[in-house]
Length: 167
Image (cartoon, rainbow, N blue to C red; front, top):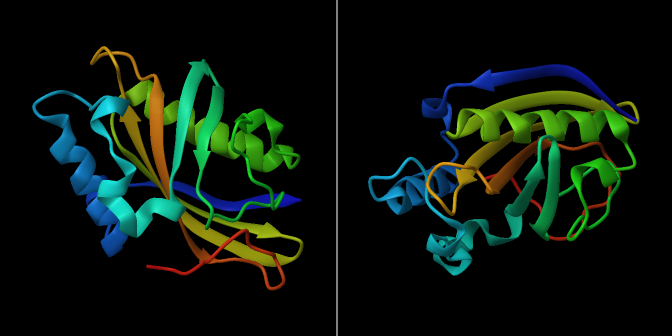
């Protein structure tokens, strides 16, 4: 079971990882004077360095998010592909609540959010950053999210679904 030790918001300027910075700069470039870009503005092939490390989600309503794309190089406590599922479908309900709260924060603020999380999973440290970028079809309402986690430490023995590396 996932246990949170630290969960804090970081300033968006604190994004220093080169791949996350590229993704943030890409998102900003796609805004084109708007508060946020639309999903149709986003071409995943344009950020190949992050392709396996991103999620694209549909915002279904308050605290309801469905994974349209779940990055193949992403780990989670359930060790499962969440494509087509919602954040409520995580078996680890502590992790589900944390993820859902972060996603809702981005929806509510209609702006990029950068979070740092240190948790424990099965007795081992589970440390990562999460960059959340809102998308909007009408330019006002967040209806999709582009999310990029950056794993720093995962518990020894936690299987991953694909290639995994920091940076």
